[in-house]
Amino acid sequence: MKSTLLPAAISVLLLTMPTFSKVAGAAKLPVDPLHLAIGFGVEMDASPEIDILALFEHYLTEASDSLRATLWSAPERKSGPYYDLLAPYVYQGFTHFTVVELGPAVGMSQTYLIRTLVSAVDDSTLDVRPLALYRVYATREEGHWVLANALPRMTSNWQHLTIAPLTYVYPASHEFNRSRARATAAFVDSLAGAFELAEPDPITYYFTDNLAETLRALGLEYFPLGGDPVGGRSNVVQRQVYIGCSFNGEGYRHELCHVLLAPELSKRTHRLAAEGLMTWTGGSGGRDFEELVPDLARYLTAHPELSLQGLLEDPPPRRQGLDVGYVGLGVLCRLVFERAGLSGLRTLLAAGRDPEAIVSTTARVLGISPVELGDMWLKECGGR
Image 1 (cartoon, rainbow, N blue to C red):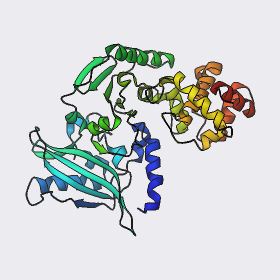
Image 2 (cartoon, rainbow, N blue to C red):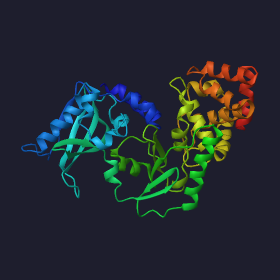
Image 3 (cartoon, one colour):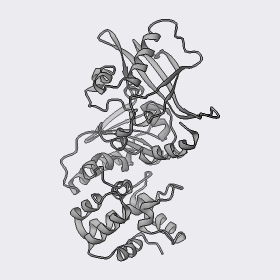
Image 4 (cartoon, rainbow, N blue to C red):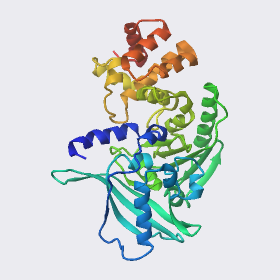
């Protein structure tokens, strides 16, 4: 991979990481052609290390999904086809994998740790640019080695507390805020009712004070996050959320909305329309939606050139806890819901990915012109 392509690749990753369902299709296995290197200090002159490395390489390069699945832990595969929790993060078509550690996992019987660096290497300069440093485990099942996720092993000594439909999983050192957790569980039930959805199935809510720490428990020891310790990711298929927030750990609702409202979205839904829905209903960055709108108003006042269609076409980068695209489309979702109800909102979400089509469809739903919609949206945002 050329280094000139890497920034674009990384930016796509950062934009698409919020939900597993969006990026599962982007996970590229088998990795072909794979360059699997062995790092310094990794002993490869005896079993079981030789057998485990062969297993790992086979998993990365096996062309058949069904055969690849047999290389993974059977109990974990019972959760469905997306049993590899790190797949959407680390399998992005990068071909350079370096095993930097392979050895017995401390405190785990018949289990080995595999720590791997995934990187791009520039063809001309040979500069190495890492995408991820991640861990999986190899464990014995029915007399042979299989791969397994880090998450259940890294969180085995964490606290587990269920307030239906949520099960909170968090470090023992955390002082749990039960009233906030109850309010979040009640929110999930009320949101399902508002969208006429069935009673929510259980959701597992992993959280720490720092997103990097939570993703470390998932098995990602390094992944580009932009330096903000506050954030979240969700795995819609497994019904899991991964939260890092020191001031609202039990109340980070954005990712729960991704899990709960996934049926409202399709492959045709514009990314910002989806994120706007989640931001309107669940806030962003651990803050409620109503807290974010004044920040949006100030931004729009300072940037009078930005229109609704322009926002859809080229949203500004997230800065100081404000994602203008998320909040701006959240305002649009609220506007449509208040004036055209749930059916109108669903029409907006089904309008496709073309910004002009989204604006024209939304205007038609509201019975106004696109120009009038732009003015109405600005007024709702509180800008200019």
